[in-house]
Each structure stands twice: as structure tokens, then as C-alpha cells.
Length: 84
Image (cartoon, rainbow, N blue to C red; front, top):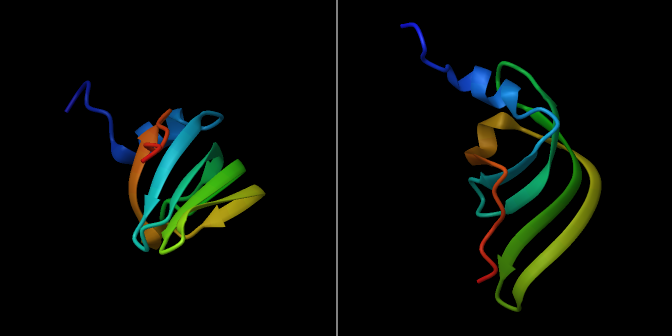
């Protein structure tokens, strides 16, 4: 299948770029992808974590995070979360 981009190839092209990540627990993260493995466990730098709570939208800033790929629902290269 010439010309087809495989999923891990797409993720590999995103190293060094900003990613918007939606997790299974409804948390959302935006950070710079530094690396990943075949299970899509990822290391992100300069991370903002967004969590919707009863009190409103909570933002947490982290220098670096290791995400378990089993909990990732969606990756959006260059994406940013909606502000609503």
C-alpha cells in the first residue's frame, strides 16, 4: 500500500510538535511530544492539563509528563482544546 501513512508513522512525524490529547477519563492535555513507544506511551513537555469539574474548568501546568497509551482516546497534531 504505497503512499499510505501508518498510525505510528504519523505520531513519529509529530515529535517536537504540539499535540492535543484527549484521555479516556475526560482529561485533555496539550504539550510538546518528546517521544513514544509502540504502545503509544508518550513523553510530553510543557504540558497544560485541562479537567472539567463541578466548580468549572481546571488548568494544571506541568513541565513533563509520561502518558500511558492505553488511556489515550484521541491525538490531534497541533490542536488546542476549545475554550468552552
